[in-house]
Image (cartoon, rainbow, N blue to C red; front, side, top):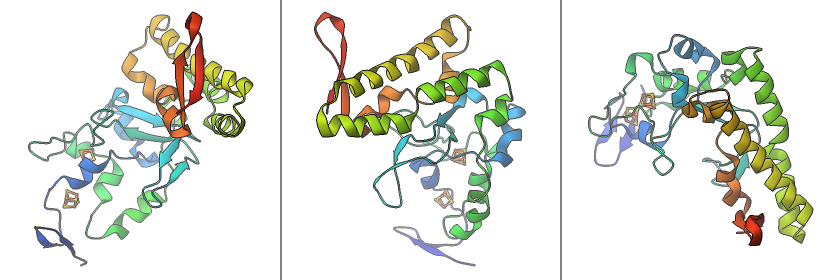
Length: 227
Ligand code: SF4
Ligand code: SF4
């Protein structure tokens, strides 16, 4: 059995429940986790979707990268604290231990090979959980109109040449992204906590990663400017 050195704790070859892996980030969900959602062990309101093309900091290269497919994750504690929502800071215990996702079951910090089979299996998708419902049609429409790959292309043009037309395209994208959520909550009477699962995180949050910000100009008009 492999072992690793943990600063201050020495060599370990089994879990000492330090909670470090749960504090660093929340888990990705794979297809094999679908039963946990379907049975209600992990309610959907505790999940969020990182959408295809969404920018993120690649932990391996430490550079900005863009997701190749959607990934559904358990929500972090909040925007500032990346630790898993189910991690108890005081006891270092998992609030859903018996129903924890496959990646949490397989992760052994002293032997990372154990996690490889999980990481090469398919990610859980929104379609797996929602099926071909009217909501899925709306999600597809949102994905088409709020495509992060288009946002990346528009942002690159804006940064290169101050292109106002591309700026308007992004403002319109952000506006649709906001209105689809407002409509689902107000007219569809949906729980606001479901929005980050259905439509991903609000696109406006990612603007700084594209080196852009939204300002309100004279007459209340929203304008996109460089960060
Ligand atoms: S698997 Fe996680 S909780 Fe267990 S010892 Fe390693 S880092 Fe700590
Ligand atoms: S689900 Fe449980 S084991 Fe997995 S990261 Fe969250 S607290 Fe840790």
